[in-house]
Each structure stands twice: as C-alpha cells, then as structure tokens.
Amino acid sequence: MEFLNIIYFIILTGVCYSMLISKGKLLRSPFDARDTLRVSGPEMYWIIVFSTGLFAFSFNLGIDMSAIRLFVLMALCGLGFLYTANRPILSTPLKIYCLYLAWLIIGLIYAPSFGYGIRVFLKYLFPLIFCLFASAVISDFAGAFKSAVVARLVALIVMIISFIPFASVVFPDTIWYVTAMVIHFIPMMLFSLALVFFTKERWQNVLYTMAFLLPCFILTLRTSILGSVVGLMGFSVIRWRVKALPFIAGLIVLSVVAIFAIPSLRSKMFFDKNVSITALQQGRISQENVNTNFRSYMWKKLENGLYKNHEMTGSGTGATQKFMFDNPRKFSGLRAAHSDFVQMRCDNGMIGLLLYLAMVLGVFIDCFKIYYRTGDNRIKLFALTAGASILGIVATCYSDNTVNYSMATLSIPFGFYGMTLALNKRLS
Image 1 (cartoon, rainbow, N blue to C red):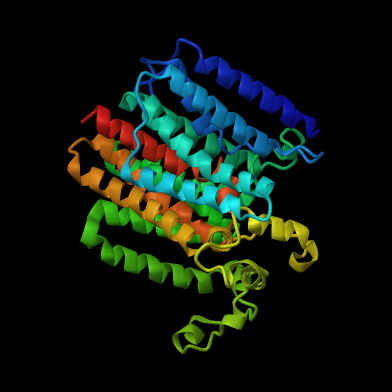
Image 2: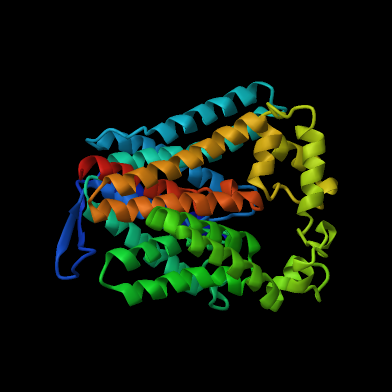
C-alpha cells in the first residue's frame, strides 16, 4: 500500500507544476463565498504548497520520499521566481540566515561526511527559499489570506483523519509523524487566535484556536506544549507589549500546574509518579527524576563525541547524523538527536547556534516593528502570526527534530514571515 504515496507524490507534483506555469485560476473569495478571486499561476502554486506541508509521502523501500519532495519543492520555488514579476525581499534577519547558511557551507570543509552535510544543509536552505518565494509571489492581501485559510482547513482535515481508525489503509504514512503534525498545529493555532482580534467571526476562531491547541495536551506531547506556550508568549508580547507580563506570568503558572494536575503528563514528565507540586516548591525534585526519554543520555554522548574540544566550530555540518548512523548501538537505533540545538552545537559549534538564534530573534523583532509601524490591520494580522509562530516553532527545536520536519514545521512560520514582508512592502 505504500506505493500509494508515490502515486500521491507524482499527482501533487504534477498539479504544482501545472499551476505554477499556468495563467492563473478563479477561486472562491476568502471573504465572501459569493465572490471570486483571480490568482496568478505562481500564487496558485503557493496556495497548494503552503497548505500541503503535512504530507510526507513516506516510503520505506530504500527511497527517502520526504527528501525527494523537499528537493522538488525547492526546485519548483526556484523556477517560480522566473514567473513572478516581483523580486524576493531579503530583510535583515534573512541576511543573517544567509550568513548562517554560509557557515554551514564552511562546515562542509571539515565535515566527516560530505553526503550527510549536504542533506543537513538542504534542510536549512528550504525555509529560506520558501520565505523568499512567499515574499515575491504575494501581491495582495486576498492571495495571502486565501493561502492561510486553506492551510488551516487542510490542517483541520488532517487532524480529523489522524483520529479515524484504519485511515492508514488509504493514507499509509502519507502524513508526517504525529510529533511533526502537532508542531504544525502551533502556527495554525496562533493564526486562528490572531483572527479573534481582527475579524468579526470571533467565536468561530476561538473554536479553531482550541482545536489546534488541545492535541498537544491530549497526546501529552511535551515539546509541542512547550512550543505552544512560547508561541502564546510571543503573541502576547507583540499584541500587548509590556502589558503582556501578567499574561506571560499566568501562562507559566498554568503550565506548571498542568504538569502536576494532568496525570498522563505528570507520569510522562517524572519517573516518580507520585511527585507533587509541593515537592517542586520545596526543591525536592532532582534532575535525575525528570524523564527525558533517553534524551539526556543521548545528548551527553553526542556532546562528548562532537562538541567537546570543538566548542566554537563543531565537528562539521552533518557530523551528528553520521555519528549516529555509524554507532546505532550507542543510541538504541535512534538516528536523530531529538534536539536541533544540540545538533547545531555538535555540527557547527556555538557560532552556528548563535547565528541561527540571532536570525530567529531578528524575525521576531522585525515582525514586532512591522506590527507597530503599520496602521493596516491586514499587515498586523500576518506580522502577529509570523512573529509568534517563529518563536513557538523554534522553541520545539530544544527537544525534537523540528528541522528534519521542515516541510511540516518551519515552512509555516517562514511562509507567514515571507507574506508579511510582501504585504508590508506592497500595501504600505
């Protein structure tokens, strides 16, 4: 049945290419179902790729379909620049991103494996190309909003399908792993929350917000909970500035209470199932009692083997993946570090990690500035979503392989940021 994924991939790629080189389509308006919206071929392609990042099309017979799909998407975006009249917008944070990518290329020189290094480089290259393409292809608010609401609708449908028994018969590993899927829901939740403040359909968007927030608690996915909380904090800072401090404090308190109040979350968090919030207040919870699901041991092994004595430059781009593939017994067969921050340090040292974090902080600050410099609520909507999303998604890099799931995870905040840059330039 996995051959279905090859068929799905070929069909979707064919549709993307045909839309990209087409003269455009008439779509239903996102504002009034009775009206139509004319979009260009590249805009139609953008709507499709922005809303289908959750589809991995995994295939386990020696073909890495997700890697092939990532390459094809970048190639089509590169081709798409030839069909757009507007130039991509290279903001200051994106220039820092280019510096980071340049550092990864330097890391290839002393990397233990050029092949693994290139694979890692391409995963980091994809969000930049995706962002630049969005900044070039979006010409007005209607196209940007249409792509966002379609992406949200697809995410909701995928969520429903994922809870249907035997759906895997029709969609065998078609959708990304549940961890990637729920991380994808973070910007969808933040976009829905932003719409609460900028549209009249408040209750409808409140329901959307809750629908995308609940899965991380229902499935007790700690990394996604962390990302959701950090995303909400970023949202509040942009929306309310200093007045956000009480809200942030409340989020922290609620998060701590949730860890101890939700039995499934508490049992997943600690080895001692009877630990209480009183023990936390009294400082009686040791680090050894925190269940990291093998992560702490794995991170220590990686850092001792690759980061130690190479603190500034790391052991080379792709070194972490090669080390784990070459030593499967040391990591119980796991082939990913389950922390992009650890991998960044091991591969490219503190220089690489700091460059990446500077870029992320730069995107957030840029969205913050755009939000308060514009008087256009349409631009504010996207700036608020993009700024909060980048913080929420990158927070998950602490304890998951978020970069490995770039199509499902990083594509969304960088897509929103690219559309923010486009709207800020063309509507201001």
